Length: 109
Image (cartoon, rainbow, N blue to C red):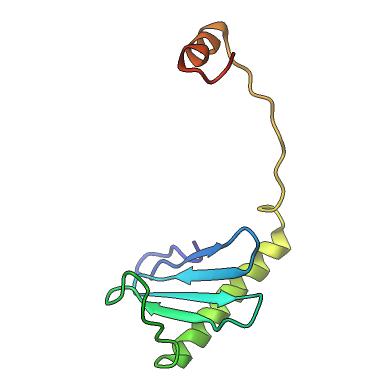
């Protein structure tokens, strides 16, 4: 989430695994930026178009610019922290009872 202040709209950020699409969603709109290829960016008005069939980016260019700015602001913030890119593998420890339950369910042998 980009902001969670009381009384302010919640904004969510997402990206595809290959980072070829970045998206930001508010309660009414979803903005999608294509980072690879020549496909145009997209803006959908979710309240009227939940299946995202009508790209309204040409109708709301200022709004699209605003969402693009928010998207890059969040991306820059995440790049600076780098904390979401780093994962530390951990070894889980389980007791005998848990191991038997996992075997019974077929998760371990």
